[in-house]
Amino acid sequence: MNVNNKCLRCDKAGMKSWEELNDEEHEVVKRLPASAEYSLEERKATHRWCTRCWYEDVGQDLQDFS
Image (cartoon, rainbow, N blue to C red):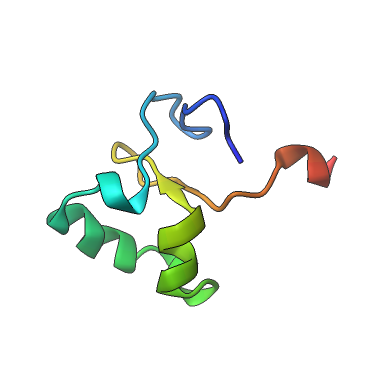
């Protein structure tokens, strides 16, 4: 997971968890591409989102892919 709390796509600080998003942002998140791969419950529990570019941090360590 991106532990420095910055978006990996646009470098904006402040990735938000589900609890930190407002109702309108919840509706946007429900329509993002990751909704096809992960259940909403899993996304609520482990994912974070950038509200500038809507990048979704799925909680996988990038070092696992190198």
